[in-house]
Image 1 (cartoon, helix red, strand yellow):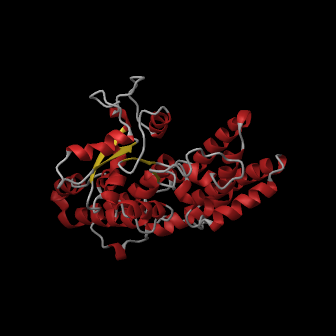
Image 2: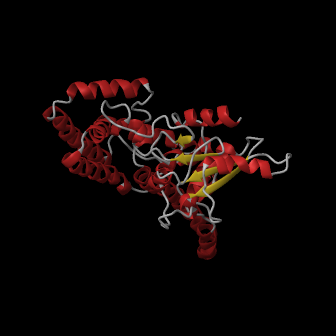
Image 3: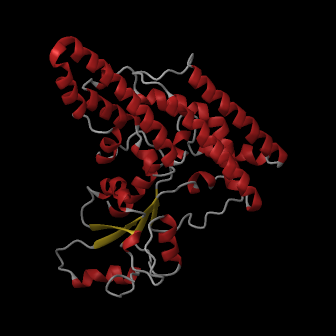
Length: 346
């Protein structure tokens, strides 16, 4: 029910057009997991004419259970309870989490696959889309005052090395997460915790303009821990007798376009954001240190004042990233959802 006490079903939303001026475009209610998700989805619908798109987060829905909650599960439960009925004029736009990447495993049940009027990110979540190396380079360039072409290292290189390094253990972790159930899910939780601990090693990277890989002790430790995790996950697949099932899964995700170059798009978004926020901040800090040295050399007695002015002019990287409209080129899988939206409303 909505705040007026009427059922918020598809018929109610669609019938609103009969009470509107003929010149007014029909309203489409777009339910999101939280207000923060509007930063991703509003740009998708922004240039579509002929509809009045209204974005609402799940917590404002007044349900019969009187709960106030955000999230994908909350919206799906309201749909299942019949309190929100979906149509062309009332839709969900949601993070896929692991639903899309798990759907290639035989036996994985995604009861929402193919449900009309639900638009999924396909990649794990909005953070995976925000963290586009194109926009990271733009933000770093803007903050440090160095043209993108003159930056010591484009972030596409960082993503490429990271994604290639995690591919073998992570594709096995995704498979086991999809096929193991019951009491074995506890093992998967442990593997996921281990994987997060490994990628968090990269937060210890030193302040440097170009992130080093080969010949870097920290990177070597990161790769060594990934290798150890790979052995554990491979051993578990063998113990369960799932080698053939894993091979089938690997072929299917490959056909879908998942590769060593883009597997990072399926890492839990919050975990990925923590790592790349830290790496980006350290790159920015390296340029700041260089500039401060230049100020000290040039300004001498007045250096302190000038340094304070310079440092205080900076806006945190994360604030810049979240305040910018996402850049969608270079992000596969989500493009399928964008095309679907255009085909329905464009």
